[in-house]
Image (cartoon, rainbow, N blue to C red):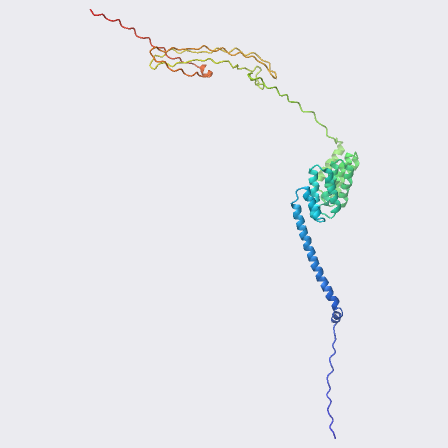
Length: 351
């Protein structure tokens, strides 16, 4: 008999099971890779665009900071169109044109700003400047809708209360006092963040309307004309018109007395003092003060000259200089008189 061979039983192979995520990845692997690559490209493109925009904005800001003339502003507007710097350049251009008395061009620049830069943060202020310039040019009818746009579209801005105040002024200038009063009353009611100065102005205007004060300025009386007297003739006496006295005193320019003084010899006896009194001047006539008075003044007569002869034996002394007229009026001491010579003795004859 043959023996039976045993049979070896092998274990069953394990069944491989995949998760839904793995199945999804296997099914959409190519799509996921494509999306990932697209996302990377989008991020890179966004970074490049942001960097370029930032660099452009920086360059535009630098160009605007260096702009000083209207031509510089036009260069910034043309090269950096659509940027905030271009809008700022338009505002600066409007101010420069207004300063050059080019009012129509300034208004046109502000209109261009309001249409091309509607998202600019300074749009309410630009509209207020546009309306104010139109009103100053006498175009209140065109300025009124601009003020109304500020009060409706930008009611929360800090210039809305001022725009409402200007609307009341336009109504008041047109003779519509009731509408103007309603506009003034709405300033503190509709604009809670209004500046206190605008509120005070609206209250003052309401009081003026109630008091029926005039709205036009009246010229005052003309200033008096200042008459300048003509210059006096050369050599005429000078009068002090502001003097408190009724009759001003005239000092004629007469010739002062000339006195020649010869010094005495040292050791000679002194002579008696001589009092020299100058001749009094003639009394000045009374003169009526006129813008150009003509006064005839006669000079005082010259005082007599006094000559003193020195002793014959003494050597002649040098002549002294003439003293001023003021010192001549003082007391003058003449030189001492020379001593009389002693009598000569008679000769004695010899016996």
